[in-house]
Image 1 (cartoon, rainbow, N blue to C red):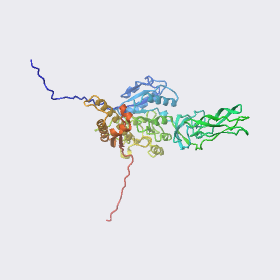
Image 2 (image 1 turned 180 degrees about the horizontal axis):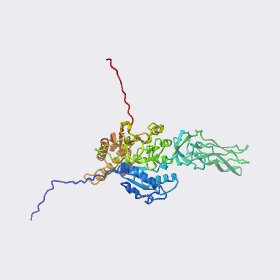
Image 3 (image 1 turned 60 degrees about the vertical axis):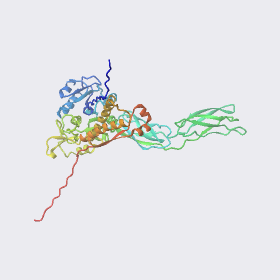
Image 4 (image 1 turned 135 degrees about the horizontal axis):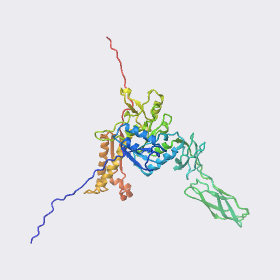
Length: 525
């Protein structure tokens, strides 16, 4: 029986690409509860309407259950397009301890939420050491100097810090304990960059036997010169040399010649280390909440805190990008929680081709009280400090109250940062999805120039969408070539790591102020 062989003339490669679920991180925010709900400590629950929040609240008792109701009432007065979570931290009485609970929770649960609406009494005066400004770096430091921060009055806690050296000078001070109850900035002092060593010796017979270092000193870049008092006439003067460690500390003295003819132990003289210059610095006070928010104030922080403050305290958050501070109107009833209005508007952003990212400034506000006197001098103080408040829209002939000015405390428009964050979040997810899909495709995505080009195109597509969606004015992705990167980072190549992408993005802004000129001309009849 003859066998029939059918030749293969077509190869079919099947590739299944699964699109990633769009990231919802920027629509995820939490009302902070301090023992005000029935939730277990550390737990959180999504609430899509006011009644969902109210169902979690304690009828009475400890915690901020009443404040949570005010937060939720104001939040859902803006609409029901987006909900929020309630995060239960558990009850503790001291505000500093409450903030510490949130700090610990965030560390243990990174990137769960994009924003937090915090209790109103978390806004405090600056009474802790937030940082130290180095006014003179000093010189000659071979070991980290001791940092001494003066104690506060009134029974507070003394702040502590650790110096960081660069080129034998103090670059910065890392705050270990910020202390508490400082009413003025404490003095900061540094130990000197060197200390002269001292030692003694004992005799065995008429020769030097044992050398004991009493003060090891420090700041010696090389071993110091060791000299002994001369032996009596006819004797031999002892000699030796010092040994220092990498920190410039004298660790031992080696006896090269024990000498002879000594009737009493000779005096040892150790040369002084090179003269250096002692560093100087000044302490900067900060609030506990400001210190926490400052940890997420970098361009990659991706975390925001909505704070209720006043005209006096608004400056406490100066330059902190991760804080959006709200100052309620003096006439606002206690049942309002003004910051919840801005919190809703932050979470409701959902950029897309038919829903471009709009400025936060001048968004309509509902269920909150605008300042009655537009000429109140406190308003200008608040806005100058980059705080936010609710004012009337009457200047534009609009009766609805509006948010002024929609800025983060570093002075940038909040939507500017939202757009930059959108690019970071979406590019990260798109690249991860492309790599996963690439491992299930034929041909596969490999770590080579073609692979880098493919991923760069993925990232640029997101960047282009950011421009179309109003998140950026422009965004350009660049990539280090395969040959260059692998030559400079061979260990990364072996581990399958590529850190060669970067994106230059220019954020999108809206109008905050506008000036017009009017020219009037009278013509001769």
